Length: 385
Image 1 (cartoon, rainbow, N blue to C red):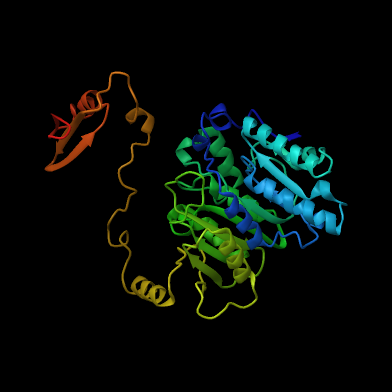
Image 2 (cartoon, rainbow, N blue to C red):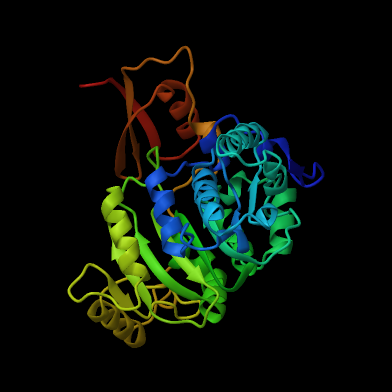
């Protein structure tokens, strides 16, 4: 078992959060993990012992165990030499690492392989700070989704120093993608399921340019309305396959079915040299430097580009565009208290506008917030009146 955890770089806030969601851990459904492995071509009909695969944040092992089953199946057919170099997996959270490590050992022993392979393969530490020797033919997984506000300042500064794409309000998955792409072998493929906001918003501009200039965005699957995870998420997920090849057109699918048989068929279609006519897969030249990527029909894209040429942007026209109302400190505004009353609600009036609020903290918190705000006052009523 390897460890690269550096206590001088990370803090307990990042290393030991109370719940998986607090550390950006949202677990992928097994059929989706298998699908991503199919998309990048990590299949047991190949000599996988001669290739290397990386899982940068393996969590409860849904990708890692699927990788291992495929590798062992391939090894029985093609040979076992070099198995110790075939996998690298990294996990930050100690308890999660231990549980998945033991699951890997159990599977190795069940299949008749040395349990000591797990000690070569698995690393406990921060993927963004660990030394890793590449290259890798495949990088797959579900990188953590941690907002920039949740990263301790000293750690954030170190991330920004190491990763050029970690700028503005970039979330943690941005440097995960950058580092993973930098470790790809020539012709290698990255397959991630993660939020797709970086493909459109401001903080993703540098990563878009890095991809557009150096890689091929081969496949994009919009998963916003598909239950790809074992819990509900508020992000807009997508599966992207990016290869270290000359840039080219992207194969696009919106809202695929997650039935395992249909996912298997879809992977075969997306990896084929030619696409069947009249199918659900569209092809478009999506990447265009740092500019937002548009995963829309050609006529829609043409219209948007024509509007961009003819008219200034809102900011160029003198408007300031912001992200909307955000406290930046939810823990100070959202709480559960033993003295709360579930039927207390409030109607807040401010500057001619009104909001109806129902909260266990209504009487105390709202009163204190608006007491010092001119023109704003809460009026109390019983819920349902």
